[in-house]
Length: 259
Image 1: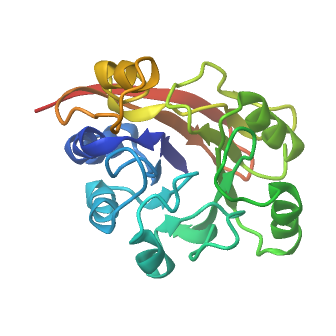
Image 2: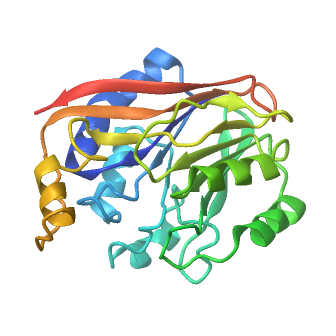
């Protein structure tokens, strides 16, 4: 099985980039299943239902969320019945599911979203007891993919190494910057600190440079701005799995111009 994971979709330009390109990418790369982190898709914070639907229509099989899981009020009303959408597994007080099993070409794939806690202010319990219990007591599957959404690269590496050999793959999200450390860990789990982003290529982690300077450096009020057109990155990773432990992981990156 070839799994494509794409990092944080950021704003309208990220949604447009996937709508333009994802089905073609699936065909060219012979992808069997696509997981996309969508927590920044709606104006940079949270995921509206209409934008979730856009991701699915673009060719996504499963959408994961991160620290902005409650970034849009409407999310709590629709997340529980959307089987292709996952909240962080350790955001235990929020509606919805944090792990699901999908059937892919006769094989079972579990996808789990987990939220780190270092430098993260949103509510999440310690993931280790919860996730260990899932591995010990949950239904076994042919593959298990984990989106670990966290600020700290060391926290991501710690989680992946702790569960090395017990999950198929751990790929990080949240920083919007693709890291150059895709590899198989000693016991066989595929790991990459951060998949990067699907969004505006010329900005600061997907946001317009000027608005970022105005807000952070000059102290102006107002949101970060995201251009709706321009050069966009589509960043992530492709994982090749013929058994529970992958045979390879490689970064994926493509640029597309969005009008």
